[in-house]
Amino acid sequence: MKTQGHSALVTGAGSGLGEATAHELARLGAKVAVLDINLANAEKVAADINAAHGAGRAVACQCDITDTTSLQAALAKASAAHGPARMLMNIAGIGSAKRIVGKDGNAAPLEDFVRVVNVNLIGTYNASRLFAAACAKLEPLEDGERGVMLFTASVAAYDGQVGQQAYSASKSALVGMTLPMARDLAQHGIRVCTIAPGLFATPLMKTLPEPVQQSLAASIPFPARLGKPEEFAQLAAHIVTNTHLNGEVIRLDGALRMAPR
Image 1 (tube, one colour):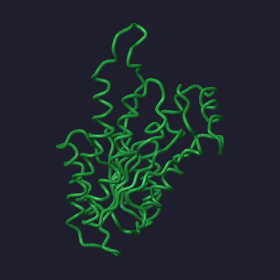
Image 2: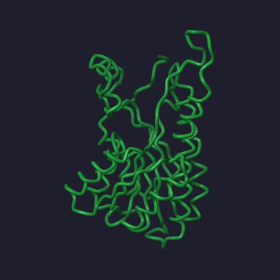
Image 3: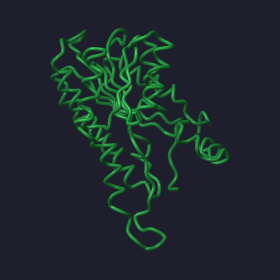
């Protein structure tokens, strides 16, 4: 599917991988809705896109993907600004690192596990179901395609480290949901793919001390550096434009395989 002139929804677009993806899609001619729980961040990214690619190219939408009312309001705002969306980039997510038995001997709090799964898995499904229902009503394009959606997993789906039970479980679930979702939506001409990124130079990563960042980068076989958010964005855009990519999970990690800790 060509990006030019079509509307895209990007969750978690207020920073990091989502911000880079929103910029890349706009550069390729898409109209982008910048969805983020942090409205100030979303407005800044939208303003930057409009300054770089023309007024009206991006709209900021505050959105909690775990809250259907909030999500529906954001989707309505995006549709009013840009028309019905044919692209959904599910990039919003959170992390967690808690040993199941802590140093104090107590069990990990259940609330932490539920929170991570609720955002990363259920929030992604929530956005996907609403997008798919609307997209399925659109007129088909070339090859009968109506739209495309992306999930953002992680190498932790395969190589989860100590303390990453909640995060790995949520990302593994997205991997497991990719093929059945693609099969389910094939009748509607909607493709589904997933990217499983490794270690990337996101704002969260940059909060770590420089020696820690360097150590993490050195663990990547090649190139021995952190991934660049624009590299994630380039792959996300390629998934949109390569119509034969469907039901696939792509690791983007420089051949990294995470150690236990």
